[in-house]
Each structure stands twice: as C-alpha cells, then as structure tokens.
Image (cartoon, rainbow, N blue to C red; front, side):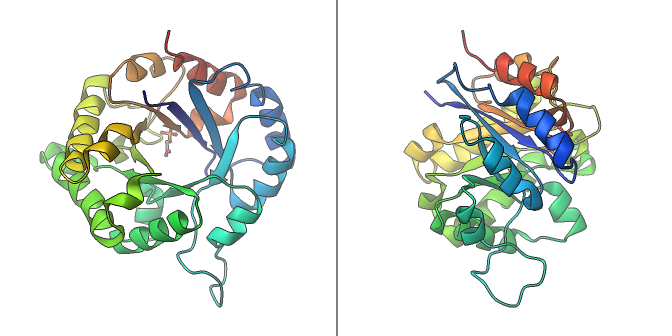
Length: 252
Ligand code: PGA
C-alpha cells in the first residue's frame, strides 16, 4: 500500500510572522496518522525557520528547487548539501513555473534529480501539459517525454525513492482542476510507462496530483486508485484549508 503524500508548495509567499502562524495551525497534522505524510516547501530563505518550528512535529519539509552543482561560483543558487544541512527531505523539481519562467530544460531537471538522489533528498518530479497540448491531444506524449528524458539520464533505479507530481499547467493557480478521471488516466499512463522499465518501482512510486486542489475537490481526487496525494499551492497557505485537504486523504 502506497502512503498518501500531501505537499504544500508555498511558492514565493509568506513572511516570518505568517509562516509562524501557519505552522502553528498545521503542526499537529500527522500526529495521529500513520497513513499519510505531510510536507511543506517554503521559500529557501525560510527553511531554517520551518526546521526550527517543526522540530517536534511529524511534518517534513523540503525546498522548491535546488542546484545541480555541488558548490562554487553559482550566484543565487542553493546546493543539495545545504538543504541536507537544514534537514530537508524533499525537493520539488521541474515545476511548470520554473520550466517557463526560468527556462529549465528536461536535461537540467535530470541533473538536479540526480544531485538530489545522491544527497538522499527525495526528488518530486513535476510534469504536465499546457492547455494547447491537451487540446491537441498531446497530453500523454508530453508527459511521457518529460519523464523519459529524466529516466534516460539518471536511470530507472533512481526513481526508487522519488515522487512524480502530475500538474497540468492549465490547472495551476487557475481554480480549474483536472477531473478525477482525467487525472487518474494520466497517473495510470505514467505508472504503465514506468512498469515497462521496472514493475516494482511502478507499483511503489507515489504519483501525486497538483493543480487547484482544494478542500472541496480533494476527496474525489484521492478516491482514484492511482492518485496517491496532492501537491497543493494556493490552498496550502491557509492552515484550515490545508488541514481539511490532508484530512480528506485519510483512507477509511
Ligand atoms: P495551485 O498550485 O494549487 O495553486 O494550483 C499547485 C502547484 O503549482 O504546485
């Protein structure tokens, strides 16, 4: 049985006071449940604050991006060993906002993936199609390519401790969610793609959905057999709503 994973992606939001309040609200999450794992990904500069405040909590935390390089003259970058120093367990990679605003290529994302695996930080590989690609019926093709580019570079075994997040670009921050059936169809396809290379990895890997997940639609998404959790943006900034999403994922 795959554990349910709910990741809050704070993006470039928050400040010391707001983060403290949010963490106070959600810090009890996970205390009573063994079947779900909750993770928050604050902006890098607040990772130290989050690590301190979550010392006694079961909530894990991670970063929204990382450099593929170990160290050196890379102004503005943060390395995997720095994330490790602050106890990060996860890192988001290839988020569509980074693919479009920072022009991250599949090759660069694969390099970061490899660096994360080496540092024993779980990479969360984000994939997804744009609206035009969906309308042109290229969804599966686009996602298959995004995944295979990484697999080619890092090898399928590197996915043993990885997560895939399916995030249709048209659903991110728009209030428009993929229907549970649409998301399930893509998740199945991803699992099949991986199964051709390694059945064990395909069965065990967590494939989570992201894109306008909220407290009202979470339950129907989580009821799909191949949706193992959610990557939550906007709704992860409101403690009560994030709690409701996490509670909706509790399997009876
Ligand atoms: P959203 O963002 O929940 O605000 O749509 C999801 C994401 O970008 O990870």
